[in-house]
Image 1 (cartoon, rainbow, N blue to C red):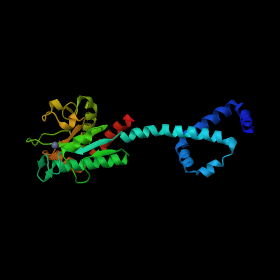
Image 2: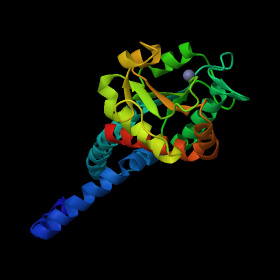
Image 3: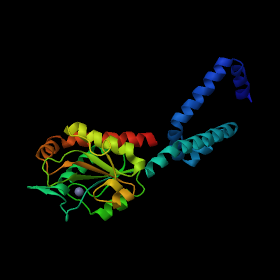
Image 4: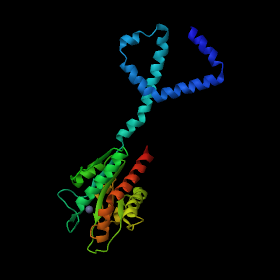
Length: 258
Ligand SMILES: [Zn+2]
């Protein structure tokens, strides 16, 4: 075959050989998907027009491209199963803590929606216990937490002492560092202090005892005290920035998993 003879000449030059092979495979890896896509669109009649002596070469090329395209798909398949869960505490039926006209369930729902906004912008897939004004009950939140790479529920604390303040995240000991990062993200924006161990509270030391959401692997972020005038004001004026900071912690956590 003439083609083979000509190629043999070129192979003698080491630089041509290495350059051509690496460029060929680089192009093949980059465009394998597109090539296979185009190949599948070509009608069989046209494929039959490939000269006999080229059929083996083309067949081999298509085979390699298909394998490469499949290999490239692997990480994407993994991504499909990776998701974040963010939920709002309490529900449309249960307001949680109340301070004047403000209800915990409504404030944390706004916060959840703001975090969701930034997750969408980052291209992350997530599950929530509702959009807009919808806030489904805890049983839904626990179900959504299962299988998530990170599950967070937002709450606000309340106390009879109007001076009680600070940010905390209740989580299992394995999520201590993540809990501290989430609390710090919120506290830095609101100008609040951290509660517990630098923002982390083990549920065994929490006033509420064992929590279904935490047992399901979730983290509960307390976004300050609704009963504290200053923290409530900070929440109203800065919750979008705090949500952005929380989303950033989530995005970094997700990136580290990929
Ligand atoms: Zn709550």
